[in-house]
Image (cartoon, rainbow over all chains, first blue to last red; front, side):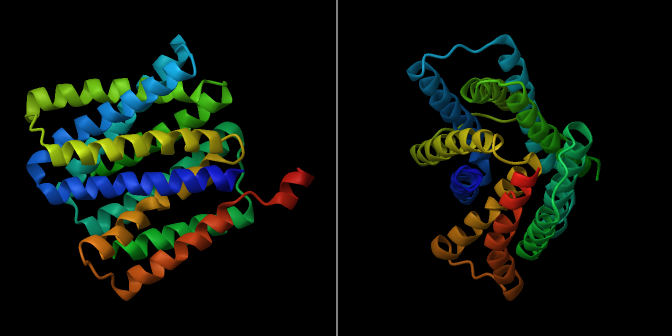
Amino acid sequence: MWLKYIFISFLLCGISDTTWKMAGEAGSDYVFTYLLLFHIFALVSSIIAIIIRNKKIRKIEFYLGAIIGFTLIAGGLCSLKAILVLPGIVFFPVASCASLFLVTVLANLIWKEKPTIRQIAGLIVACASIILIAL
Amino acid sequence: MIYLFLSVFFYAIAALLYKHSNQINCDKLSIIAAERISAVVLMILFITFFDSFKPSLDITIIAFIGGITIFISRVALLASLKYGKISSSWTAVNLSVVIPVIASIFFWNEIPNSKQMIGLFLVPLAIFLLQEDRKEKKCG
Protein backbone atom coordinates (compact mmCIF):
# COMPACT_ATOMS: atom_id res chain seq x y z
CA MET A 1 0.00 0.00 0.00
CA TRP A 2 2.90 2.36 0.88
CA LEU A 3 4.48 1.71 -2.48
CA LYS A 4 1.21 2.44 -4.32
CA TYR A 5 0.67 5.80 -2.60
CA ILE A 6 4.31 6.82 -2.75
CA PHE A 7 4.52 5.94 -6.44
CA ILE A 8 1.50 8.18 -7.17
CA SER A 9 3.03 10.96 -5.05
CA PHE A 10 6.46 10.50 -6.67
CA LEU A 11 5.07 10.55 -10.21
CA LEU A 12 2.74 13.51 -9.77
CA CYS A 13 5.26 15.52 -7.76
CA GLY A 14 7.69 14.92 -10.63
CA ILE A 15 5.12 16.13 -13.19
CA SER A 16 4.50 19.18 -11.01
CA ASP A 17 8.27 19.82 -10.80
CA THR A 18 8.38 19.57 -14.61
CA THR A 19 5.84 22.40 -14.87
CA TRP A 20 8.25 24.52 -12.76
CA LYS A 21 10.92 23.81 -15.35
CA MET A 22 8.44 24.72 -18.14
CA ALA A 23 7.63 27.99 -16.39
CA GLY A 24 11.36 28.70 -16.02
CA GLU A 25 11.82 28.06 -19.75
CA ALA A 26 9.04 30.60 -20.45
CA GLY A 27 11.21 33.29 -18.84
CA SER A 28 12.24 34.48 -15.40
CA ASP A 29 9.69 37.34 -15.55
CA TYR A 30 6.85 34.86 -15.15
CA VAL A 31 8.21 32.76 -12.28
CA PHE A 32 6.29 34.40 -9.43
CA THR A 33 3.11 34.75 -11.49
CA TYR A 34 3.39 31.03 -12.20
CA LEU A 35 3.92 30.29 -8.49
CA LEU A 36 0.86 32.29 -7.45
CA LEU A 37 -1.34 30.61 -10.09
CA PHE A 38 0.16 27.20 -9.18
CA HIS A 39 -0.88 27.61 -5.52
CA ILE A 40 -4.30 29.03 -6.50
CA PHE A 41 -5.04 25.97 -8.68
CA ALA A 42 -3.86 23.61 -5.92
CA LEU A 43 -6.10 25.50 -3.46
CA VAL A 44 -9.11 25.36 -5.81
CA SER A 45 -8.54 21.59 -6.29
CA SER A 46 -8.47 21.01 -2.54
CA ILE A 47 -11.57 23.17 -1.94
CA ILE A 48 -13.49 21.25 -4.65
CA ALA A 49 -12.43 17.95 -3.01
CA ILE A 50 -13.52 19.24 0.42
CA ILE A 51 -16.93 20.31 -0.93
CA ILE A 52 -17.44 16.98 -2.73
CA ARG A 53 -16.55 15.02 0.42
CA ASN A 54 -18.59 17.41 2.59
CA LYS A 55 -15.72 18.05 5.02
CA LYS A 56 -15.21 20.95 7.41
CA ILE A 57 -11.78 22.32 8.26
CA ARG A 58 -11.16 22.12 12.01
CA LYS A 59 -9.17 24.86 13.76
CA ILE A 60 -6.20 22.56 14.44
CA GLU A 61 -6.14 21.49 10.79
CA PHE A 62 -6.26 25.09 9.63
CA TYR A 63 -3.40 26.22 11.90
CA LEU A 64 -1.24 23.19 11.16
CA GLY A 65 -1.86 23.48 7.41
CA ALA A 66 -1.17 27.23 7.50
CA ILE A 67 2.18 26.64 9.24
CA ILE A 68 3.07 23.95 6.68
CA GLY A 69 2.19 26.40 3.87
CA PHE A 70 4.36 29.07 5.49
CA THR A 71 7.34 26.71 5.89
CA LEU A 72 7.04 25.54 2.26
CA ILE A 73 6.93 29.10 0.89
CA ALA A 74 9.70 30.27 3.24
CA GLY A 75 11.79 27.22 2.23
CA GLY A 76 11.18 27.98 -1.44
CA LEU A 77 12.16 31.64 -1.10
CA CYS A 78 15.29 30.71 0.89
CA SER A 79 16.17 28.20 -1.86
CA LEU A 80 15.81 30.96 -4.47
CA LYS A 81 18.08 33.25 -2.41
CA ALA A 82 20.61 30.45 -1.83
CA ILE A 83 20.76 29.51 -5.50
CA LEU A 84 21.77 33.11 -6.31
CA VAL A 85 24.96 32.81 -4.25
CA LEU A 86 25.72 29.08 -4.45
CA PRO A 87 26.25 27.09 -7.65
CA GLY A 88 23.38 24.69 -8.39
CA ILE A 89 25.85 21.81 -8.37
CA VAL A 90 26.46 22.54 -4.66
CA PHE A 91 23.02 23.72 -3.61
CA PHE A 92 20.77 20.92 -4.92
CA PRO A 93 22.66 17.88 -3.57
CA VAL A 94 23.46 19.55 -0.23
CA ALA A 95 19.90 20.85 0.29
CA SER A 96 18.25 17.55 -0.72
CA CYS A 97 20.53 15.25 1.27
CA ALA A 98 20.60 17.50 4.34
CA SER A 99 16.79 17.68 4.31
CA LEU A 100 16.48 13.88 4.07
CA PHE A 101 18.93 13.31 6.93
CA LEU A 102 17.39 16.01 9.13
CA VAL A 103 13.90 14.51 8.67
CA THR A 104 15.25 11.02 9.45
CA VAL A 105 17.07 12.18 12.59
CA LEU A 106 14.18 14.30 13.89
CA ALA A 107 11.58 11.58 13.19
CA ASN A 108 13.80 9.18 15.15
CA LEU A 109 14.02 11.63 18.06
CA ILE A 110 10.35 12.64 18.11
CA TRP A 111 8.47 9.44 17.16
CA LYS A 112 11.22 6.84 17.66
CA GLU A 113 10.94 6.03 13.93
CA LYS A 114 14.09 4.01 13.65
CA PRO A 115 14.91 3.25 10.02
CA THR A 116 15.77 -0.36 9.21
CA ILE A 117 19.14 -1.26 7.71
CA ARG A 118 17.42 -1.69 4.36
CA GLN A 119 15.90 1.80 4.63
CA ILE A 120 19.25 3.32 5.62
CA ALA A 121 20.69 1.69 2.50
CA GLY A 122 17.80 3.21 0.53
CA LEU A 123 18.55 6.64 2.00
CA ILE A 124 22.22 6.34 1.05
CA VAL A 125 21.34 5.22 -2.50
CA ALA A 126 18.83 8.11 -2.74
CA CYS A 127 21.49 10.64 -1.69
CA ALA A 128 24.00 9.14 -4.12
CA SER A 129 21.38 9.38 -6.86
CA ILE A 130 20.59 13.04 -6.07
CA ILE A 131 24.29 13.95 -5.99
CA LEU A 132 24.95 12.19 -9.31
CA ILE A 133 21.95 13.82 -11.01
CA ALA A 134 23.05 17.27 -9.80
CA LEU A 135 26.62 16.80 -11.12
CA MET B 1 25.03 29.88 3.32
CA ILE B 2 22.40 30.94 5.88
CA TYR B 3 19.72 30.65 3.19
CA LEU B 4 20.79 27.08 2.44
CA PHE B 5 20.41 26.15 6.13
CA LEU B 6 17.07 27.94 6.38
CA SER B 7 15.80 26.19 3.25
CA VAL B 8 16.78 22.77 4.65
CA PHE B 9 15.25 23.66 8.02
CA PHE B 10 11.91 24.87 6.63
CA TYR B 11 11.45 21.86 4.32
CA ALA B 12 12.30 19.45 7.14
CA ILE B 13 9.80 21.19 9.44
CA ALA B 14 7.13 20.89 6.72
CA ALA B 15 7.78 17.13 6.43
CA LEU B 16 7.59 16.65 10.21
CA LEU B 17 4.36 18.66 10.40
CA TYR B 18 2.84 16.41 7.72
CA LYS B 19 3.74 13.45 9.91
CA HIS B 20 2.35 15.18 13.01
CA SER B 21 -0.94 15.95 11.23
CA ASN B 22 -1.20 12.27 10.38
CA GLN B 23 -0.42 11.26 13.97
CA ILE B 24 -3.25 13.39 15.34
CA ASN B 25 -5.70 12.16 12.66
CA CYS B 26 -6.12 15.42 10.80
CA ASP B 27 -8.08 15.30 7.56
CA LYS B 28 -5.70 15.23 4.59
CA LEU B 29 -7.80 17.52 2.39
CA SER B 30 -8.22 20.11 5.15
CA ILE B 31 -4.48 20.20 5.80
CA ILE B 32 -3.73 20.67 2.10
CA ALA B 33 -6.41 23.35 1.70
CA ALA B 34 -5.10 25.30 4.72
CA GLU B 35 -1.53 24.88 3.47
CA ARG B 36 -2.47 26.33 0.09
CA ILE B 37 -4.48 29.22 1.62
CA SER B 38 -1.33 30.21 3.50
CA ALA B 39 0.79 29.78 0.35
CA VAL B 40 -1.58 31.89 -1.78
CA VAL B 41 -1.67 34.70 0.82
CA LEU B 42 2.13 34.73 1.09
CA MET B 43 2.57 34.71 -2.70
CA ILE B 44 0.07 37.60 -3.10
CA LEU B 45 2.05 39.59 -0.50
CA PHE B 46 5.34 38.73 -2.20
CA ILE B 47 4.08 39.72 -5.68
CA THR B 48 2.53 42.93 -4.33
CA PHE B 49 5.73 44.11 -2.70
CA PHE B 50 8.55 42.57 -4.76
CA ASP B 51 7.22 41.62 -8.21
CA SER B 52 4.20 42.07 -10.46
CA PHE B 53 1.45 39.78 -11.69
CA LYS B 54 1.96 38.98 -15.39
CA PRO B 55 -0.53 36.28 -16.39
CA SER B 56 -0.48 34.67 -19.82
CA LEU B 57 -2.41 31.75 -21.29
CA ASP B 58 0.67 29.48 -21.42
CA ILE B 59 1.68 30.17 -17.81
CA THR B 60 -1.92 29.67 -16.64
CA ILE B 61 -2.16 26.26 -18.36
CA ILE B 62 1.24 25.17 -16.97
CA ALA B 63 0.25 26.36 -13.46
CA PHE B 64 -3.11 24.56 -13.77
CA ILE B 65 -1.37 21.24 -14.52
CA GLY B 66 1.22 21.86 -11.77
CA GLY B 67 -1.40 22.86 -9.18
CA ILE B 68 -3.63 19.84 -9.74
CA THR B 69 -0.75 17.36 -9.81
CA ILE B 70 0.84 18.75 -6.62
CA PHE B 71 -2.55 18.56 -4.87
CA ILE B 72 -3.01 14.86 -5.74
CA SER B 73 0.66 14.21 -4.94
CA ARG B 74 0.25 15.71 -1.45
CA VAL B 75 -2.92 13.67 -0.79
CA ALA B 76 -1.02 10.50 -1.76
CA LEU B 77 1.99 11.54 0.36
CA LEU B 78 -0.20 12.05 3.43
CA ALA B 79 -1.95 8.71 2.74
CA SER B 80 1.44 6.96 2.49
CA LEU B 81 2.34 8.12 6.02
CA LYS B 82 -0.24 5.68 7.40
CA TYR B 83 1.76 2.78 5.99
CA GLY B 84 5.36 3.91 6.27
CA LYS B 85 7.89 6.16 7.92
CA ILE B 86 8.11 9.87 7.13
CA SER B 87 11.83 9.50 6.38
CA SER B 88 11.09 6.91 3.67
CA SER B 89 8.12 8.78 2.18
CA TRP B 90 9.94 12.14 2.18
CA THR B 91 13.02 10.59 0.58
CA ALA B 92 10.95 8.89 -2.14
CA VAL B 93 9.10 12.12 -2.95
CA ASN B 94 12.38 14.05 -3.07
CA LEU B 95 13.59 11.56 -5.67
CA SER B 96 10.87 12.82 -8.02
CA VAL B 97 13.53 15.28 -9.23
CA VAL B 98 14.35 12.57 -11.81
CA ILE B 99 11.09 13.22 -13.67
CA PRO B 100 11.97 16.79 -14.74
CA VAL B 101 15.42 15.46 -15.67
CA ILE B 102 13.81 12.76 -17.87
CA ALA B 103 11.38 15.35 -19.29
CA SER B 104 14.36 17.59 -20.12
CA ILE B 105 15.84 14.78 -22.22
CA PHE B 106 12.66 14.41 -24.28
CA PHE B 107 11.32 17.97 -24.46
CA TRP B 108 14.43 20.16 -24.36
CA ASN B 109 16.95 17.70 -25.82
CA GLU B 110 19.19 18.06 -22.75
CA ILE B 111 21.46 15.03 -22.90
CA PRO B 112 22.41 13.76 -19.41
CA ASN B 113 26.06 12.85 -18.80
CA SER B 114 27.12 9.39 -17.64
CA LYS B 115 27.02 10.34 -13.93
CA GLN B 116 23.46 11.64 -14.29
CA MET B 117 22.46 8.44 -16.10
CA ILE B 118 23.78 6.36 -13.18
CA GLY B 119 21.87 8.64 -10.79
CA LEU B 120 18.66 8.13 -12.78
CA PHE B 121 19.05 4.35 -12.72
CA LEU B 122 19.64 4.39 -8.94
CA VAL B 123 16.24 5.98 -8.23
CA PRO B 124 14.08 2.81 -8.61
CA LEU B 125 16.59 0.92 -6.46
CA ALA B 126 16.38 3.60 -3.75
CA ILE B 127 12.56 3.48 -3.71
CA PHE B 128 12.63 -0.32 -3.59
CA LEU B 129 15.00 -0.23 -0.60
CA LEU B 130 12.98 2.45 1.19
CA GLN B 131 9.93 0.18 1.37
CA GLU B 132 9.02 -1.16 4.77
CA ASP B 133 10.47 -4.63 5.22
CA ARG B 134 7.35 -6.85 5.47
CA LYS B 135 9.05 -9.54 7.55
CA GLU B 136 10.35 -6.96 9.97
CA LYS B 137 6.94 -5.29 10.26
CA LYS B 138 5.30 -8.61 11.10
CA CYS B 139 7.90 -9.38 13.76
CA GLY B 140 7.58 -5.84 15.19
